[in-house]
Length: 158
Image 1 (cartoon, rainbow, N blue to C red):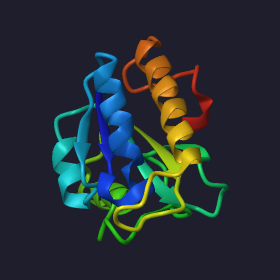
Image 2 (cartoon, rainbow, N blue to C red; image 1 turned 180 degrees about the vertical axis):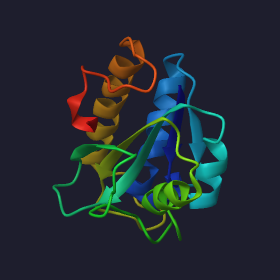
Image 3 (cartoon, rainbow, N blue to C red; image 1 turned 90 degrees about the vertical axis):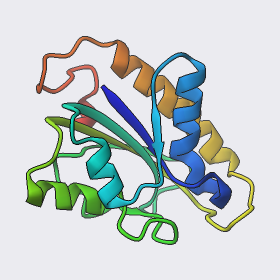
Image 4 (cartoon, rainbow, N blue to C red; image 1 turned 180 degrees about the horizontal axis):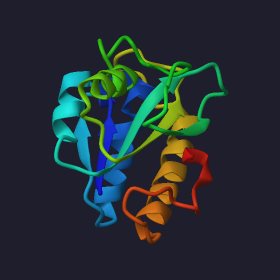
């Protein structure tokens, strides 16, 4: 399983995915960090069959809301923080679908952000959401999976 935390820690809530990856590494779970640029993400997951991506999102939900999607389904209602990703996670997924380069299993955790300006502190709600995503990923990593099939313990993805 490949876990990718996306974002920019210097831009407040946009650091949510990076913070998740750092916290997972502290707990002994391998996790990568990326800026969230589309081509970089497609390259990062090219050899992986099972991928989790975490990023800050703006959907209109309350700040700190954690949403989860099956990345193999359209993410039309999701916008990543455009100020830091020219073409972000949603665009990476769309492009990878067109190029037939999606992993067999792709889960996306989005943490609703509020502040994306440089130098601002991460929102307390986003900080709490980071811990929630970490717990959910640990549960997912620990659950048995049938390759390529949905995890019945996490129906939010399917």
